[in-house]
Image 1: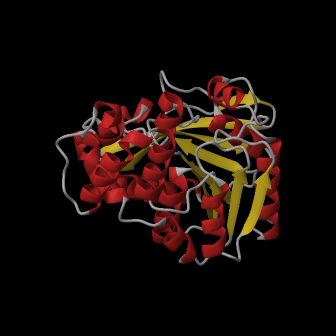
Image 2: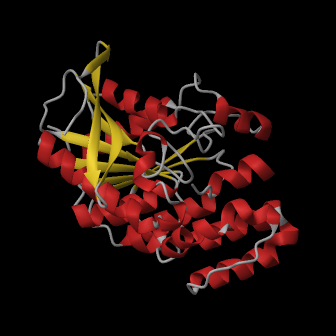
Image 3: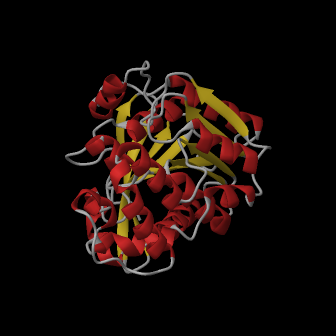
Length: 324
């Protein structure tokens, strides 16, 4: 699997099982959702005990790299970000579905050949998840919570699936090649010219055979089809085309997505609700202005995420009458 935003920071940085009651305010159920290619994605549906079963479901769409349903990457980071978010929202009466993306964790068999994986696969998979939840569980409304790269996936898939609302957290406002080149210029300036050449070729649908060793994780041959397809989409253009309520959330201590990127989304969608959370980093945890501590929180599974996220989402849900 690819690692796009995160690796630069870290290195240069049909239900199958019975419902399980975890605590007294929600239940969790494992689902297998059929997707294109005759394979299935594995995920967890968290439902509050007080929920009216046919109201609202929020779908968490994971960020870049081999990120699983809980927001973790095996052997790389372990923040439990999405697990915390699902449980925080369940406490507020919201059902949440989170899933292992194609090729990751329990969905590994759905994307075993990396060179065949495209960004459009992720879009189609999310559309399939939304349809499944509506048809099998009769949810009246669906909102999408896209984190980082997941926000772009949700913008595009949501329009296809007629999602009722969108929440973008730590999301870029520029195309992926602009984001990557900016990160490389900041952290590997001597490689920026070569990276620019590689990205230019990929944008023109040309494969690149010679990649510097330091950039192999980002631009190795098998990941190039994914990057080519992702470059076709501009987050600011996609969010501007959304005809539904939008909430943009950003932490002011995010080392991966700067406020300038958030500003691009806000400019593209001026009607969106916005929330800037003080001291929040990219994995949604509170960190003072200390980069070492910030990165340590990527591997702090017991540290909760900012409580303000669920509060802002709850206000967004109530304001737009997604639940009665």
